Amino acid sequence: MKSSGLRRRLAGTAATAVMVGAGVLAGAPSAAAKANLLAIDKVSFHAPGLQVKVTYSCDVGMDHELVANATALGRGTHDESIAAGTVKKDKLVCDYDSHVAQVTLRPAAGSHFAKGDKVQVAVFYFDTDGFSYARQETVAVL
Image (cartoon, rainbow, N blue to C red; front, side):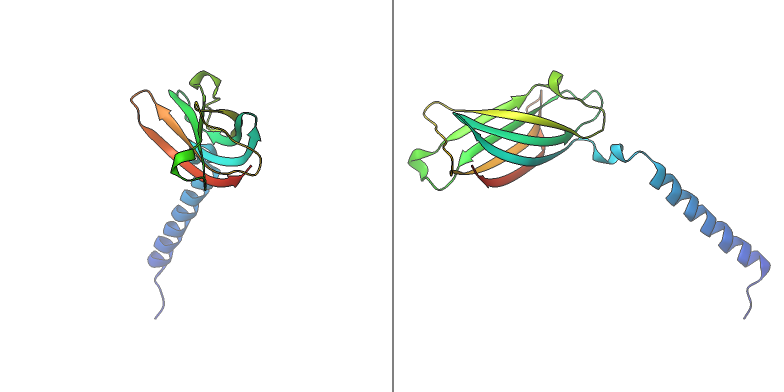
């Protein structure tokens, strides 16, 4: 059975519309799809605490801080060491593109870290209402 000319034109028009739509999506700025993402690149000992290298992207006008928390693993509950650090909102470059930040984590009172310690690190955005999102975690040896 042969397709009529009308059916071929409709099929051609539909195929063209699909290709144009795909071209528009492929040509759209990829940064919009990357907004508000976090990735932990490296965790290292930085006496007396830690440093975490983070690749981030965020929306223009975002009013959040980037937070990093670390907990020493394998020490038992009586010798738990924790550390925290932030990158304030005015230090973040929020333009949908990827940027790198070094977050210095300071240990809590009574906490200590040393080379060779195994730590769990979490990074996330924290807003003024107390919500956190885009959480990423990793376990690393210092």
